[in-house]
Length: 248
Image: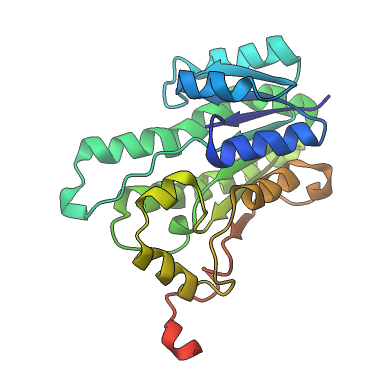
């Protein structure tokens, strides 16, 4: 059976991606630093193995990869989904907050790919880094988050360029607004209405829809696709800033 590593797998897009992998006959190493949430998620699925790991910790990542290989014997795909969302104005973003975002969103994918590269070379595997629409277009209050995701897209290109000769593919998925529990808990009705007006599809995406894009890029169906950033965003990027009033 093919094996995927999914980071940030205890909830949200990571859990939806894990479920889709399992449904398509894969086995999955579920990685998360939330021990309790990870334990709960693992019990709901077959062919998975939970590993408690903070991907921003360079001392922990090699052991995570080693445990995956010990348990499953191979790595065919690595999905870097773990991320930190921290929104605030430039003047209100301390260096500590900046570094916390960068450590998980950028350092994590660097460390995991570096550690998993030997195994991915053996299987001619795939890397999918979860970026964001905020990495493709600037917005207020996202100085750390947006910059980390833009850098992650560039990191993806570097990985694709260097690892392609070994048959290893690297792509990114940039989700737009997604109807996660967290988003629905913090988005006011005004924000929900604004996204409805700004997106050509007039709705949030679902975790399952983002998972479909991720698993596709890990599959043999995407065997000639590398170095790309797929915006799964309901058309958000295509419309630019947009003036919804002009569309009425």
